[in-house]
Length: 95
Image 1 (cartoon, rainbow, N blue to C red):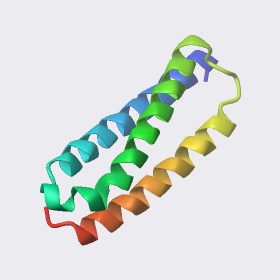
Image 2 (cartoon, helix red, strand yellow):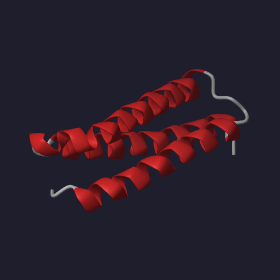
Image 3 (cartoon, rainbow, N blue to C red):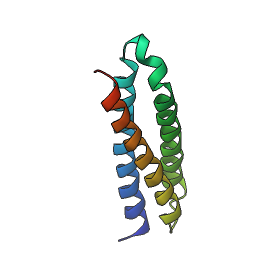
Image 4 (spheres, rainbow, N blue to C red):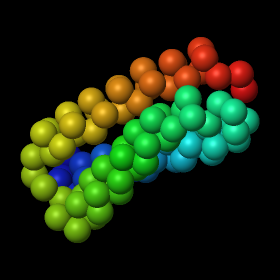
C-alpha cells in the first residue's frame, strides 16, 4: 500500500469517528436542562476528541507521515475513554 493510500484510509476512518462524535454531541445537547450539569463533563470530553480528530485529519491531509502509529494509538485511547463515558451517560440519563 502506498503511503498516500494509507493516509487517505486513516483520514476516512477518522472522519467516520468525527461524524459519530458529532451525533453523540447532538444527542447530549438535547438532554433536558436539569440533566445538563451531569453531562457537561462528557460534552467537554467530546469537544476535546473532536479537536484531536480535526488536528489528525489536517495532519494526514498535509503531511501524511510515514509512521502514524503513535498518533493512532493516542486517538484510539481517547476514543476508548469516550466510549466508556458514553456508556455511563447512556445508563444514567433518560433519553
